[in-house]
Image (cartoon, rainbow over all chains, first blue to last red; front, side, top):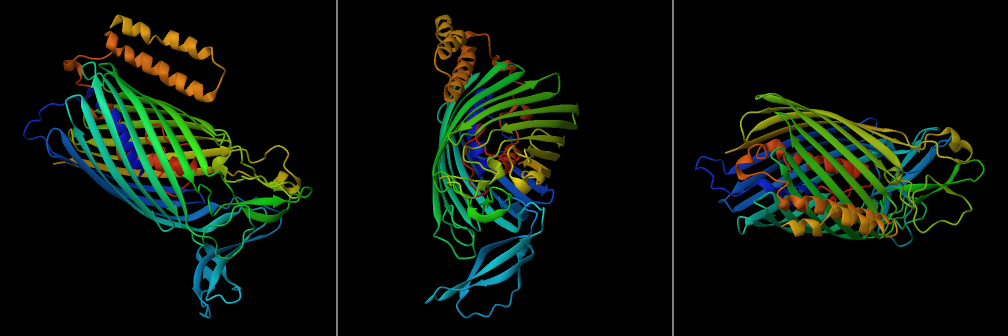
Length: 445
Length: 98
């Protein structure tokens, strides 16, 4: 869904130099953009994701676009708990069966052992739980992680005048434990002989979370019992921007985005350890808790500079939210046009963020448990680099085959100051390393 | 047109924001305003290109969203691994991956 949102917003920002002209009769009216992504995290998640987008121009002013994508993920993801010098056992619910059904399965996905949760008196169903033993001095991961997603979008773009354009669309995404529906609308206006474009767009998104095992009550102890009902999240996003042709060779875009999220934003699968204040050994594992309200803002500045034949793309993004997170992203690409037949594009990206106010590696036993607490390292302070290279073969103005390989390396503080007891010898934030292979093919007819 | 340039002078905007107490939100909006002022001065004939100079800008590599699927997949990956989103596009994730 982010593709359609990106395309919708970027499309509005893109028309500064796209002055409407009557195309020759032989200009293609339909373009097809496709890609296959293979994502590999070292010892973590693996994913494969194909996507196809189609755009058709009915006439010079009206364009229909639609697309579909699917992805499949398997592997291991952090639980949020701290490692220990002792073996640790984690139990999570994963299936409800009628009372009295013989249990023939002994192992669940990820190598867990199936255990039967004693049903309460009078219950007509019983819960199967997956029990996982994490070896000593091992960062706790949920090896049973899997997900499948199918998403689609449909949009329309309409030029009302040579300078004014409207667009809108809807999108839908479904996972085995999550559903998202959204609608967006935007407007853009050209000025200064199509050298300046002002744009604005809004998006409304309604999500429903129905985690495997139900929605846990935040800050309660992790167990194998089936949990609470589905939880919803509503989000309004707005983007305003300006695109300016700076010169014949330089295009710049500046945009501001604001997002307001209301509803369930806790990760239902994440836990946080409560540790003994002297030894640092985990004494309890409780489900994490995040605020129901989040407001995000970002400023994005993008530049494209055409040299003699090569193109430099450089962008900066500043981000902050009311969870206490601030981040900066710098992105640089150099499209080295070897000759008319192919190009090579090295890519560097640097990202750094501060921690959320409620991020804790762990909580101390005996301390007052805060209202919000999460040990999800995605909310921790860290920085990351991406190194990539893309090789592209444009066949003509409307078709291209390209292949991109990238490496992502994320570093956090695995030895926080003041770590207690045995936690001083543990790595509380192992590096995340991921490789992506992206094959893209575009053609028009 | 000249008076319009002075009205949106980056210097004036900078001075205006510097007089306010430091706030991250103010800095974000200040940066945006200054940028808009700079861009807005495109109407002052300094910036821009003549219609017959849009040849390079029409190339695919010079489009704001030249490779939308690639950009969207990147956003999806980073959304699932980092706490930030938005900027180039809407901040909504459309998935339960974060």
